[in-house]
Each structure stands twice: as C-alpha cells, then as structure tokens.
Length: 114
Image (cartoon, rainbow, N blue to C red):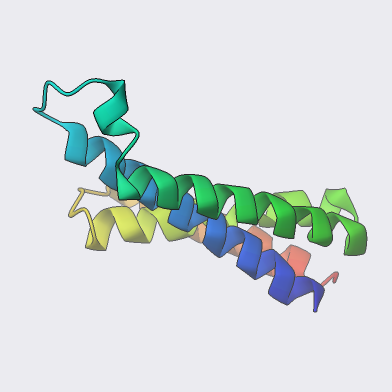
C-alpha cells in the first residue's frame, strides 16, 4: 500500500508539472492579463494535481520513513525526462539519460527497503 501511495504521489506531481508547462505554453505570445491566465484549465489542473499530490504525500509520510520516501520522489526526474522527450519533443543528451538511469538504480535500491 505504501508503494502504491508513493507512486500515486509521484504521478500526481508529474501531472501537475506537465499541466504547468501546458499552461505557460498556452500563454506564450498572448498579451493577456492575469485574469485571463487564471481561466486556463491547464493552470487549474496543475493546482488540483499538485494539491492532491500533497495530500497523498502526507499519507506516504504516515507510512514510510522520510529518509526512504523522499529520495524515491526522484523517480519524478525520470518521468519528467521521458515526458519532455516524447511529449514535448525536447532533446535529451546522453549524460541526462545516464543520470536518469542512475536515479532509477537508486530508486530500485531504496524500493527494496520498503
């Protein structure tokens, strides 16, 4: 159950980050004011995802030691790298992929502890 909650917190946080990216991309080139920007569905999705992610994170912290749970959030770096590459078509260099692989190795090692 703890790992499922942790994965849910990671996914909600990533969704929030992606929604933020879409929100700012939808604002690009527009001379709209803050009132217009506040009507962005992407912004509200980001806020909802990040808020719900925070609540799930609190449940994670009730079940896992923070020294185990927090480093496992680095899985987000890997997810965002994949999303950046395949959704936003960003260029990811070899060093970045190597870093993501090392992060995954660390997450796998920590995952054996739970």
